[in-house]
Image 1 (cartoon, rainbow, N blue to C red):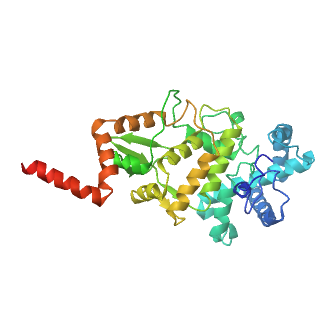
Image 2: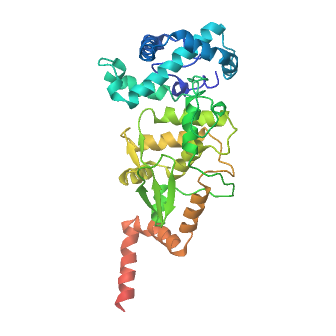
Image 3: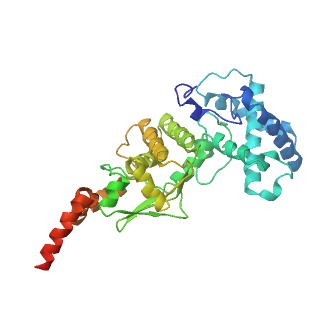
Length: 338
């Protein structure tokens, strides 16, 4: 498999469910196979359908679906189609029940135990845990043939609100440095995670909850963007690069937590800083199509204003040390008392 090696392999391994061929025979994932069958039976009962209808619909897609996987899949056509139908119907039923709570069965363990649902949400976003024909249904403004799988569908939804612009740009400094240069940070509610704006000296960022599975989520989305380099820009990769610029140390995390941008469920600010620094190490630098190029330019332009440069230098060299601050205050007192 593409990502099965290295000390971070666990970030790409499912916890409770196998979708697609790569993890389907692992013992620790067998429990969910019974739930897949249960959800399939519930779907067939609700629609008053039989399984042959779904097998007939997926059958013609089998050769193309098989080609979507990087490795040779050692399954017969019949077994491969069965896997696609079973996995696809499970995901559809899971999404349906998640969005419509009144349709859930009274004693459905998937919704009665939070840890199962949390693990399912994580596993369904893994790069190598996808159903290659799940998105063959008609979808919004894109051709169904353009969408590769569930992760691709979600990513395209995020991308739909961004414009592609190619231009030069420079990196920005960390949050602590920017704060010294009179840059403020504010929470940006009711937008997608990747919507960032800079206005009147303030960087507005959507709130991000950092918890145990955040690293795995970003790693799989970044891996997907790097593997399929057929898009104009890499939104998730660029977002991680943006945060890596802002976060060098625990001090930067503290600043972003205080303004409500980061909700730290890890409890340790240093752990959050290390997570983003290591995430950034796994990706190449953004190219000329960097999503946030204009925002970086605006921030750098703001910081390069004489007054803001002077304030940053003053705070770094004097205001952070009481021994240097005291003589400065005496000097100011002497100057204004003349």
